[in-house]
Image (cartoon, rainbow, N blue to C red; front, side, top):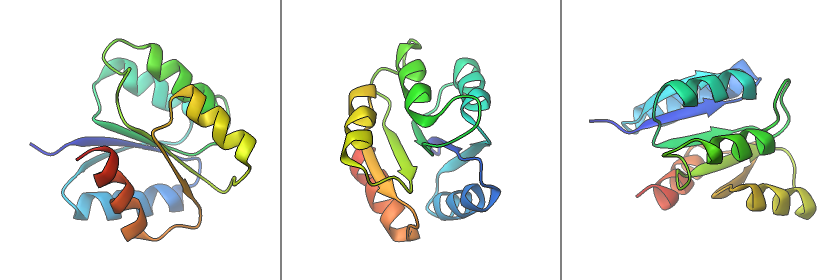
Length: 121
């Protein structure tokens, strides 16, 4: 059975690129357009991994990670931040919230797959 990954980004183009990259590699990909929608989805079903943008409406990526980590069964789920942010302070906040990895946009599909395979072997 394919592993389920939730891709969260307010950009339809980024979600499409993630879906194509990950589904071609054999993952089952679900999409959310913001942190609020993603949080509702995580409450309703179990995912094997979360890939999230940082800057989004409603709930940003760091708050999303903090909330997801509080949901039973998601404490150790791999979560990758996918963002244009390169600031070390923001990266540290993401790590403290529970991010497993960090990818800077723009990204290459093989870069995403490399990080996904590293944190979710």
